[in-house]
Amino acid sequence: MIVTREAIRFWRHGRLVEIADFHPRTTLLDYLRLQQRHFGTKEGCAEGDCGACTVALGRVRGGRVHYEPVNACILLLGQVDGAELVTVEDLAVGGKLHPVQAAMAEGHGSQCGFCTPGIVMSLFTLYHGGEQPPSREAVNDMLAGNLCRCTGYRPIVDAALKACADEPADAFSANGARMAENLAALADGRNVFIGNDRCFFAAPATEDSLAALYAQHPDATLVAGSTDVGLWVTKSMADLGKVIWLGRVAGLDLIDDGTETLTIGATATHAEAFSSLARIDPDLGEIMRRFGSVQIRASGTVGGNIANGSPIGDLAPALIALDATIELRGGAALRTIPLENFFIAYRRQDRAAGEYVRRILVPKLAADQVFRAFKVTKRFDEDISAVMAAFRFTLDGRRIASARIAFGGMAGIPKRATETERAVAGLSLDDPGRWGEAMAAIAQDFQPMDDHRASAAYRATIARNLLLKALSEAASGETHATRIIGRRETLAAAE
View 1 (cartoon, one colour):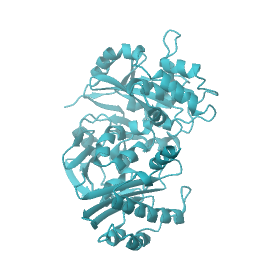
View 2 (tube, rainbow, N blue to C red; view 1 turned 60 degrees about the vertical axis):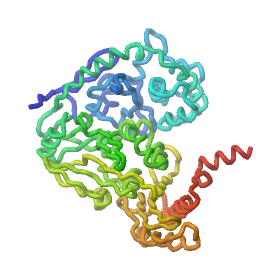
View 3 (tube, helix red, strand yellow; view 1 turned 135 degrees about the vertical axis):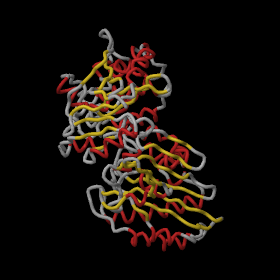
View 4 (tube, rainbow, N blue to C red; view 1 turned 180 degrees about the vertical axis):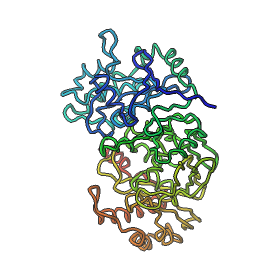
């Protein structure tokens, strides 16, 4: 029998912290500001968009401590169990600024300063985990989740390039080996349960423990990365009485990059799955690069993105187009269903009480298949899709033998465009005059709605145009001339 621990444990500022009494909905930001009275970490948007609340979590990977930025405003306090927590108050040593802080001050990277702590913490993780020296593009990607309204990003990026030019040489790198040992000692393989049967925070250590607990409490809220559930707390003021965090379940985060199928454990984060998905097709890699911010990708999980059933989730349409399946577990029973059948209606999925998403199985592309995926948003970085489209064409020479097409943002669920698929099948890539018939078929599959992200007419037009774009790229075998990056390169060459 697995012994239960009744406290979370983590390291901060060289000290072991144990907390045995907290409400399961307590966020890390509220713990820092309201209980610890440490006000360096700010609250801005309270939804994981602005980055003012960014802190770093260190966990052992490959024998060393790996730091990642997370949004403290939506991360639940219990999720820091087993990690090293680093906030902006922890960086300076003996009155001497951290190299990132010093570079920001010397380069005039701060004006009002409200956003500065979060920016510093994002750059702290780049300082410890990025390439040396980082490219300007790498710095921009790291800062995509940090908004600054008054300084302007040029001095911030310049400060990052200066601070991160060399190998890390700070107190955290000097103490890295010892901290790795400290964190390894926290991995005790015990179940965590804090509270009682009416109100608790639980973190099972095994799948059997998870299945048993969830079967006993099917009304509990499952939390993986909390990038969605966190907003229930901060925006909807949801009183989550029972929380089961999946982050300690051994093996639930495994990724098996097989020859024909990519298998992704439900709690694998977007950051962890990034490279495996990108190897299926570069378009998947670009979708993942624009998937929220670095903070969101470090916390959010592939299984969570599927299980929350959002009609505008980026991954579901792409994986449906690839004919992915998902494995669910309830008690001791396992079942596998096509991903497209998992979504029933808005925020409703084919998931029984006490059943959870266990794995996602994604077939890789065959030699005769072409894949394209496009994300259309108001902002290029860190924005929710107005329309997400994914296409997989199986070719017979220059003829499309069959197609799988899926859209997000066009209906109440991520959905296949079956009428459009039928219209695309049989088309010649050398006869664009007939493509219009397939484009018109999209109107039979979707009657999109108006909302603050896009009008119905805009969505319908974009969907048709994205199909034309996918067919054009499949016909030419090139993406350069049809992509924003390609346009930038063309303009730069012309100058």
